[in-house]
Image (cartoon, rainbow, N blue to C red; front, side, top):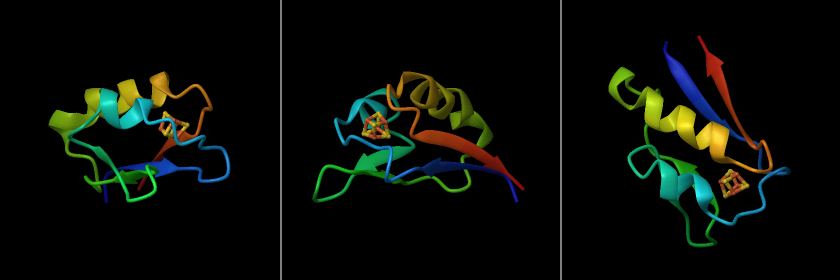
Length: 66
Ligand code: SF4
């Protein structure tokens, strides 16, 4: 249950803007690709995560709610 941040690996260009914008929600793996570290995203980090969705130039981040 909750809000889940999804990374579209095919769309992601791996330049790291998202985990710079939302370091409490996303981190980089060994390859520099983003990993969601807060799943589901807690309410108090929702705005931060949503800023990362908006910041991604490749539109590779999206929300799934269940
Ligand atoms: S900002 Fe978007 S394209 Fe860049 S690393 Fe994050 S998810 Fe990938």
